Image (cartoon, rainbow, N blue to C red; front, side, top):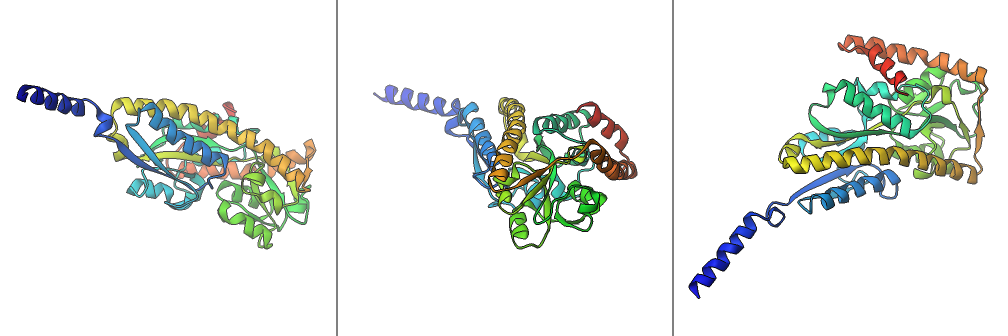
Length: 331
């Protein structure tokens, strides 16, 4: 009987040693600012579940949407400091901190989220920006064309936009200023109330935001300025130490999932744009299209934004023109 018990205990000990999920489960926290009902938030949560599924429960990720763990502007630093282990945020909320990636947001005339997302990750792969050295970048994604939306007054030409106060951040604010508006740098979470209360005359945002953030309820006009359409780059990143503690197999699995989910996020932006446009129209919104001649005027008006980026990049030791040319070639 003693031998049987000893054999049983030895077998139990070996099973614990060689069954990692029973004793070495890794638990991580993912911080995101999108509300839980937003498709980009739902995709982030599904990424967490997919990681747990494909690592056989060895890596479990607890999801914190709506800025409940870190606010959007502090998410990158929060991951570096270990407040969160993984995070998603808008790079433009940390203006000047990501000089290579900020080129992605320039008014290149984006046509879709799939296109912008592919460009964003191509830039990441090509230039391997040192600006992300404090974290392990999972992937980037970017929304579809950012348009001018206004309340009370339609913007049909450059004269109409002069003097308007428009909410925007990062590059969208620079575009607004180049077109003659007065940018107001506030996050998307503050946009609805600012429009509702008349603090601003409008906002620069993709069509999806009209439903995703309910902005279609508080704007009446959408100017589809494709020639100067910018995007906004979102980054998903992980604390370097937490990444290093994962096994090579776990890292490989997550890297594979990242490639899949980057594409999912890009497609979701386009699907959301269609729904956002429909919601905008349901609420009585009117779409303003541009003639080829007017679109050309807008393109010429924002050209200095791109030129200024190239000049500032040079001062930081970067070949801004090479980055801009690479983006144009890959669009």
